[in-house]
Image (cartoon, rainbow, N blue to C red):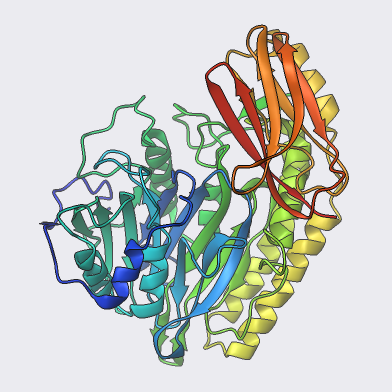
Length: 509
């Protein structure tokens, strides 16, 4: 079995000032709000280890904003691409694939220099690459052009890219240098979390994603040791909620009344979507185009939808038509929130109640789609398959009943009395969200304190004060019933002593 740990030294480290490509200069624009901290888990599997002989690329997207959508755009010479992004964020994507067969994903890297200290170039790099690149070598030129001595890139990131020739590379890009790891035939696969191998070695408790990378590698390696890996095997890995430190391959959550903590798992609290990209493939019958599978919303409460870059359009169920998120993502979020006990725990039977129906339908539909992908697929047929799967996904989630969240909370508190008194100030996610009449947030207060809770708009202005005064130690529910607000995005802000935290809410009239 080929090794996959990829701890060898990088091919080379490139530093200093390089020739600036005019297009890449647009990455250095300032004046926009920084995006949330990027702590994703990513991996690539070589075609020799997959059942379809295609490269498989995977990313669990871990961010604070839950408004996930599919964007479709055009680049040089009208070349189409599709990727994952935020609603109301223009054409910026954070991973995707284009018609030429070039694909790219990324994760933040916390150990190769300071990041998130200025305006965010992440997303712009991936979008520029999808618009202009057909080869991995061309993507390297984008990194060269922003490799300035003063720090041309703001956010250190790990990028994994492949192209239609089968070239695959990992780029660990700091602010003014990057290391390259070609993933050649001596490697079956490689994975990253939010740290780089070219930086200081992580420790078990470093919060650098050590467990997530190790767990992903463990699951991928096990699958490959038994047989070549199918793309839907990656769906299972993306949904893994084994707790941090877990060593067994199988994590059993079938036991009733078990409170599952997913704060540090592969599919963790901040995992808001996932993407899976299959490379294009040349066969005797013609070119099999690349495809991107999207999980919009928590992977545990949504189902995958394939989208091909050559499609004329993307289903409105997956895009942000006049709203801040996609319909599918909104529904998945509401469904998952109804099943949780807290923002980081879920009751086992509630998880099974939403996940089992999703999986049973997903397997059959994916099998049918994979059979259709063994021969060249026209743009019109790709459109039909994608739109049909999007509608099926929405219908599946719409017909599922909401688990009883109140009963879950009572049962959890009864089984763990220590959870009644929080250890720090915090806000749980608003529920329901999005909402059209009222929503509420749960406030954690570790000791008697003066607390203020405001609703602020997208530019940080206070819109309404929901509470101001003393709160006793414990958990408190605070509701918001808008009276004069316009539809859109707001934030609930908790201020107590030196603590400030915010949760995003979407109001729809």
